[in-house]
Image: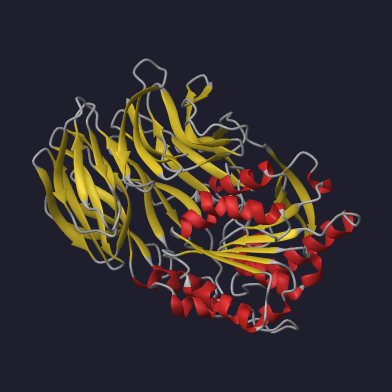
Length: 571
């Protein structure tokens, strides 16, 4: 699988990390001939590492790992030179398309401090430190001395900031209200076109302005459709048009927005999901893309809107396709992604619950779902209330109500599937992260609906997560209503309190290095279940972080879950 795409200035080269099993390599691709050509491969420490290709064919490498901090420069002949060893828990590289520098390194030294380094042939020079978590980064001037970035500080507040690399100063330039999250997302220094994101006004909006201050920030109605998320991915070479991604349900679409005429035109691309930053050159648009049968790759869209991909990443296999269906839930129909040709009649059916709470299943490649489908287990992945991509009315009920309306939908879907499959075994319920919390609640609140339960990296309750997790996780959980209670017949949504009601085989898995939901949450649940005399509990701790477990990147997780579901909870 490929991840972490980046582009050289001018777009002649792209780089990514390709992971196969436990091994990762950097790939560098060239597009000089109009056809993607693999130029080189280098070992990568892990899938989170980054390669930044340069215009002259050299490549900057950053491991992006707390254990390894070397910033490395590779030349086209294979030479390797360490430019700097820096302290960071995370970081990323930005291109600098001039002869005065190779790039900029943003090093996140802690949750409350980030450092900006200017990278040159001579090494890396510290420019300044900022009091918070820096993200993004676009150039605001033709000389490439002014960097627009985003600074998140205490309580999750985010402002757009200007970093003056020459004067070693920074200041806030985008803050629409004391409570809003405001970000600089794209800029064309030549034309002065600036694109921003904000949640000022209560929902996400995409707006644009001019660097010279000729007009105030404008928020076009075309980019504010019923609370659907719009993201700016790139600006065209003349600086007149913006490539916009629109999230509509489980799929994304790409559009070209022209600020001067306030026009929006949709591009013809395959059904799936675009992700990450794009590059727009005179020859083509290139953007990371994934679909149920296509692991993340690079999609190329020519000026004639012809599309192509990078050659296969070598993972192989005949992937099972998916389709979109509508299911009956507690408050009406919801969209779901299903895997399996005759999924409703499959004797083994999994109802899969996504993380979040504000997240959703997408029409993208899912290693875990592919493993289940290959084992003969059909998958139904619904986007119940609280899922993003369906407007504010669908999303908002779960804010301050974790395990409320979303749990009602899950139980209603499970009951409906059971009635439609009355002559077949009951469905299994599987959840990841926040969805694992929901799956445990569903197995506790309605145990007769399910034949088995799988929980991957669950939290036990909003309050328990808030008190046990890292500060940045706790702040986000609090903003989303983790500490709010629900007063109804079921009572407090605390898995430790409700778990004695679970009466089906249970698989519980957690990563030992989980940096989002501490593994202690699963250990507490395991101990509580053993106290009740549970004999049908399968508990496994596996090496890996939160992402590796909940996405199914870990082969151990995929194989264990597929075997458990295939054998009806008897691994």
